[in-house]
Length: 453
Ligand code: NAD
Image: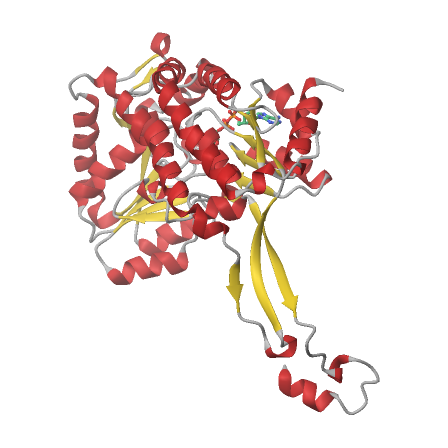
């Protein structure tokens, strides 16, 4: 038996002990996690800077502070969520009481990617703990410094038979996926997502897939163009575009295209020439991704950039005018390149988006109630923010997840609690009465039964 198998066995034993079922145990674990993050905050910041050159501000709002906010939310509401939910009993089952109990799955596996390596490891974990599971986190080998800190942090703060971090490369991930977990939560690209789904299927393990895709920003002619440009630029270049819900490209109506393009150029210029730019902007994770991104920049179509620097893994915000068939419009960009595309009208934009895989997010810029309703009804996406970018993801009251090729399942707030537990149907029947109606012989009983249904 290898180390991973031993660890899983220990967690299975721990889960079986029933400790995680206790509400107080869960709350104390969540509080402990909070304290642990506080204690390690400086080291986490350092690691994220080493991995991605992340600015302190972005670290707080999208990694540590974001997770702490979620922890506070879950700690505040967990008592209510764990209470059995009473539901009415239908007439045919009278007399009885009906409830929904949320039962944890057991030993869970969380596989996370490198772009928000802290947030995307801990955020699902909050749900796993809240719902009463044990967990093993497998962080990304690409964000190696953060993975090591996560490992150190959990080693110090938690018993590994309850919560543990297994840092390692793809081999480690494969090894883990060969084991029979009770639940897998995967965040990352869809290529690996398919591998994980196949592995999970072998043991019929319930799975959440948080994947990516090309999330468009749709700019209609009645939009507030200044606000749209500013917010698209912010959402695109946050973490240098290495965000699953980043604006992948902007689809713009022809009637405002030229005007909007000029406003956008001004905004990208302002962003790229801000004071202390270097302190406010992330770098690309590694040379492989740097080269992949650079190969997508067509010089002849570039309308604004300050270039790129391989020694620093830095690519300045880059604005390009694109056509539908360009290389940059095929796969998710996942970097600081913003293609803009001109469309005749909304119908053409709709046709373009709906004939491609359904995106994780989309952004609509319009002032018209009618157009907002049309887009909501006519174009599917995992989530959407209207007249801004990214921010729907920040609410603990909203489910976050994909649709179609951008994944399945959702989390954050109560949805994390749901995602890591099973809704168990409980009907508690009384023995005081026992109507003979359902028992054979059935002759003559059907008319009355039909009335009860
Ligand atoms: P990655 O390369 O770090 O891979 C993610 C995880 O999968 C890592 O832990 C890695 O070790 C593991 N892995 C890699 N190859 C594997 C294999 N063959 N078998 C088993 N496990 C394997 O991250 P990535 O895939 O480059 O992440 C970027 C993608 O993730 C983008 O598409 C992005 O949109 C998506 N993403 C989605 C969300 C979301 O919440 N929906 C969040 C962040 C990123």
